[in-house]
Image (cartoon, rainbow, N blue to C red):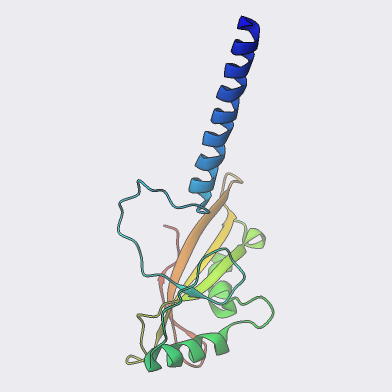
Length: 156
């Protein structure tokens, strides 16, 4: 009887440990939000790529529609990426061939008053040690799809 109780408790403990590890992985990869994370959240992006990032469901304003039209006209119809920004970042990487784009986003709080659309490109590439590093680049895009300015390449 004692052997059955010990076996049952050790099985339950093993299941609990596996559940904690899986939850940690899900939180770390961003699939599940960390309930203890108190950092200030960024505005929710609207995406046109097939990523797991959630899209906003707020009703669009006329300014948002104009930004959306400009943004979507500049994205690659095949994979939804902003190739002009990728072409600026790729040659600066340690391993340019390893660059992988995870998503391209614009933000509903942006407007076309200055003639530019703020764009975020989430990408990953191998560093000097061969490890894959994931980061984001920020840029200002003109309505003619050219990059006006790269605000942040995502690396130092």
